[in-house]
Image 1 (cartoon, rainbow, N blue to C red):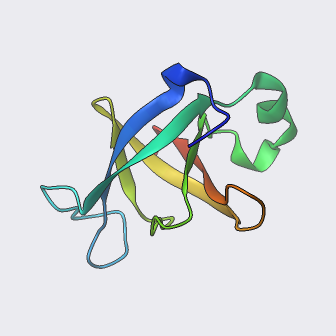
Image 2: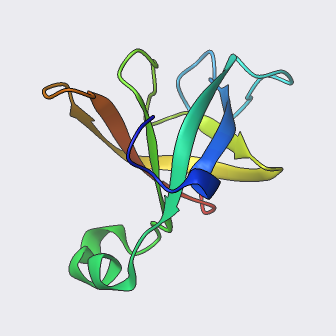
Length: 103
């Protein structure tokens, strides 16, 4: 994706539970995509009191089927999707997912 720092590009392994819950994730990723991982700024973190466990922002293309119940593995660390926003307009449409290491 464009307009991101070069060191923010990551490979994201997405694990989807067949039941849609947080239990019994498959042993192998459902699929793997490229995205950009940015740490959530402290100021934004303080303004979002309902999302205090959110630690990072993950940007992926709109073609990715990302769901709130998905488990993500990025650089060996497991993350859980907390909130998803889709920005489908503009030159570079993308999905913004707020993710955390806490389930």
